[in-house]
Image 1 (cartoon, rainbow, N blue to C red):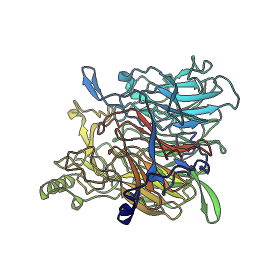
Image 2 (cartoon, rainbow, N blue to C red):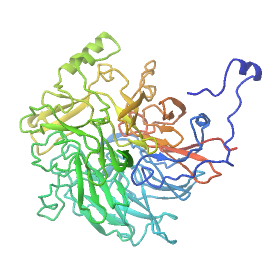
Image 3 (cartoon, helix red, strand yellow):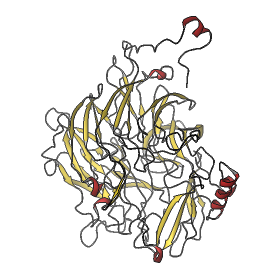
Image 4 (cartoon, rainbow, N blue to C red):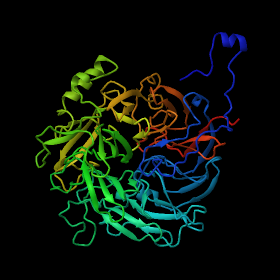
Length: 640
C-alpha cells in the first residue's frame, strides 16, 4: 500500500503526517452512471468515473451504510437444513437513486449520495421453501421516456419464480403488469419442488421486453425443470417469446404442453446488444452435472454462449465451450461485449471467461472465434454407460489460467501432511483437464467453481485489459453406483450413479496444493498476455491464529475497473474491500468490512461538482465460510 506520508525527516520536522487532501469538487471528475448490473447491458464492470485515482485512493473513507435487515444464519431443524443467506447484489443507478435486492428478494431504493432509504418492497417469498441457496444478484430498469406512474419500472425476478414490475419512484407494483404487478413463471414448467426452480440473476432488458433464465437445482434428477429462457413484455407482462435449449430437430414442449424438462438452464447474467437486436445467454450444464449417458444430444446447447434474436428468441448462432459437459463447467459469467482492432478493422466481439480458466473471444455477429481455437484430444475411457467427446476446444491466443497437477505438486505444512496429500492425489484418476468422472474418483482441475466464475470479468475497453478472479485448487468427483446411494445428497436420479464432489484437502483441512489457491489476474486481450497475477486476501478470517499468513484464498464475487486505472474488489473470504493498481496489481488501499464482500462493487459520480462513490455489498456467502450480513457500504474521498 502506498504510504500516507514520508517518515524520517518529515516526522522530525513536522511531528507527524498531515491529513488527507480535500476533494476538489470545483474541478470534480467525470460524471458516470451504472444503469445495468454489469455497468452496461453488455457488461464490462467498467466506469469512466475518474475522480478517484491511484494517487488519491488511499484517502477513501466510508460515507454511508444501508442495512436491509434481510439475512439468515444457517440452520438445521426438523424441517431440514437451510444455508445462510448470501448478499451478492450489485446495485444499479438510475438518476440519483440506487436500486438493489436482498437475498430474499426485497427491493430497496436509496439515495445515491446519502444512502437514505426512499422505499422498499417485499415480495414475501417463503424463505424456507424457496431459498435453499438464498441470493439475488440484482434488479433491472426500464424507462418509457415519459413521466408518470410506472413509466419507470424496476424489474426483478424472485426465488419462487415470479417476475415483478415496480414503479421506480414509489416502489408500488405496476397494476398493468401481469396480475397486479407480477407474473408467475411456473406455468409450462413440469412439476417440481419449490427449491428446485427460481431466478437469482437480474433480467436483461431489450426491445421493451425483460429476458430471464432460471436457477435449476443441480444434480438431483435427469428430468429437472426446464431451462427455458423467456421474454416478457415490460408493460403487460405477457409472454413475448420463449426458447427452450433443445436440439433444433426436437420439439421445445412435451406431450403435456410443458417445456421439455432436463434442458440446460441459464442461471448467470444475460447480456444484450440493442443495436444488433441480440441477446447473449451463457448456458449451464445439462442436468445432472456428472453423468450424461442418457442425454442423446439433449446437451446440444449446453455450456455455450447462445445469441438469440431479441424480438423473436430465434437462435442466431451458438458456440459451445465444452462438448458433452460432465464436469459442471457451465458458462458461468456474463458474456462481455467490446470492440477490438484486428488487422486494422474494428471487430465487435463477445469475451467469454469460463470455469476452465480459458477465455474465448467470438465475433459478436457470427459467433466465430476471432483468435484461433484448437480441438484437442482429451482423456477417454468413461464410466460404464457414459460416452465422451473425443476432443474439446482450447483457445490458443489468451493463455489458460489454470494448470493440471500431479502428485509431485502436493503441498503441506509438514512432511507428514504433504505425504498424505501426495497419496490422495495419486489415488485419484488424473489424466489432466477433462478427466472423466469415475467410480474410482477423479481429479477435477479446475474445480466446478472455476477457474473463473460469475463475478468476472471486468474489462477496460480502452486499455483492452481484462481482470478476472481465478481459482487454482484441486477438487474431486466420484460416481457412486446406484445400489450404494442411500443418503447421498447429489442423487442424479435417473442415472446409474449418484455423485460425491469435494476438494482435495490435507488432514489439516487445507488444499493439497501450494498457495495461492486463488489469484486476481490481468490479461491483455489484444496481445494475449497475462500482465500480472496476484494473490488476494489471506486466511485471517477463516483459520485460527497463527495460520493467518496464507495469501490467495478462493472467494465468490468479482472486480470492477475504472478509467483512472483502479481495480476495486472484495471477493476473498477476508473481510476487506481492496483497490489495486490496474497497471501492476499492487494493493493501494484496503478497508475493513463486517464480513466478506462476495459481490461485484460498482462506482459512479452524479454531478461534475460532486463526489465519486464506490459501493459494495458485504454479506458473506451461503457456503458458510463467512458470517451472513446485510451491509451495503459506500466510500468516497473526503469532502472539501
